Image (cartoon, rainbow, N blue to C red; front, side, top):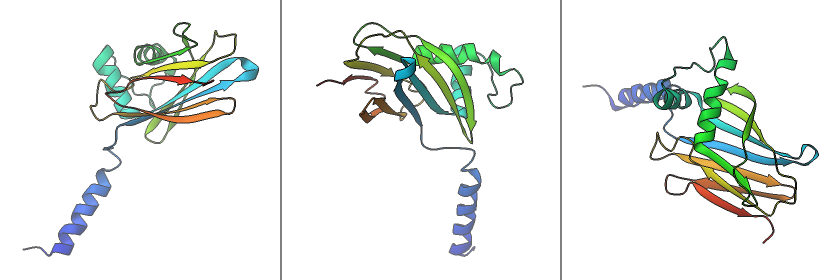
Length: 171
């Protein structure tokens, strides 16, 4: 019979060893910030790379290695398609704004995708966000949003039961 401390050490070692391979939390982070001098919204998405690669394969049948692909420009149409399918952004109820891909950045186990949303010229009174990123893959998916428009800055949370949000900027 093995001593309890030995079993605990082995258990801890196994958990610690595999913690880099698996992440038990299913979360994405989205940041929306208005850039006044360029008159657009800068939107960034942080998604776990392995999950993102899996969902792109499951939905579109494409196998991408986001951090290893020698032609990252070939990945952009799939990024755009997924973002357009899973995320919608609208201001003043004027219709969905189209995302324009800016760049991607790899960060440890995650990928950051940077987009800009343009096309709105007048004062913004409300914003509507639909955020279902990774919701079709994980039932426990949680998406966090930081929204900033001039001095207005708030954080929000999306879940499988709540993928739509309306933000009133001039209550």
